[in-house]
Length: 292
Image (tube, rainbow, N blue to C red; front, side, top):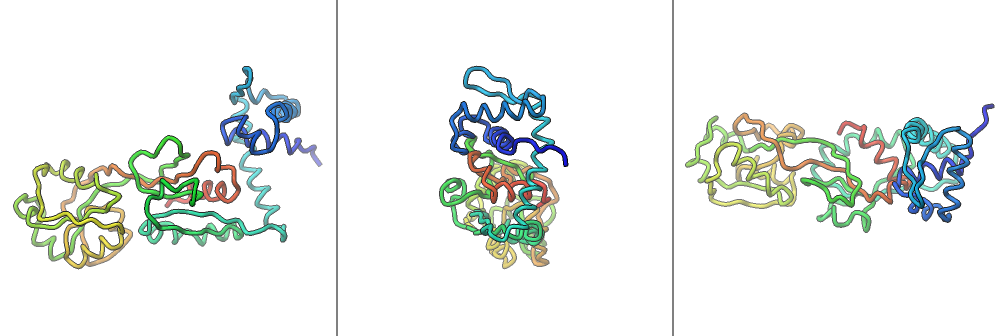
């Protein structure tokens, strides 16, 4: 059997890279900074590579260190998963995840059986409440939120890019025609999601309708309800075209065949310091490759 690297030293190295701070890694492991540094020095002696450059109390990952991390990290996850699968004494892994209902229904839940098969011990507590970003790191471990640019304090992964579209019932679409008419549109009610306020402005600007003043703009906090309201002829919904396609409701259609970049994207958000927690790391690594 090949000689194994010093596992405690390997853990110290990986935590330092993931947390981006030797001090944070030492705190997580209950070590002094000097003890953490000694463990990493042991790993450097074992590998014969300079993994970090040191200047006073600051440790900076070298190119060799990055290459080593990229090569080793996936195998550590595989090892942890293998041990988890064989350990009856391990408890359930639990993640508190905030998600918008429409994203959950259309995109996340159809993929969750795949995650369950890969990690049967991982269970999700789902929260669809408001203000997801504000609650990450408090009542939520992570969130999938719809926003423009996430706060820099988050570890953020962009999951998609979207196009804004006007969606309405088929009878209303026939009435409005295929070319935007300001007079006809000003007689309509528009339906806007409370988390997508800028989308209506983006849509009007792209169509040259900045002067548009509709009868009313009704706000909803549920994408699913907006699509239902549009299907019932209650107004024109300003949503992502992806929402309409995934909803597959024959009662609704898109107005005007134009591709308009949305100010909003879906982002996976968590606090960087929490990323080393195993439930969060499993979900993070899965979702960035899940093709949602």
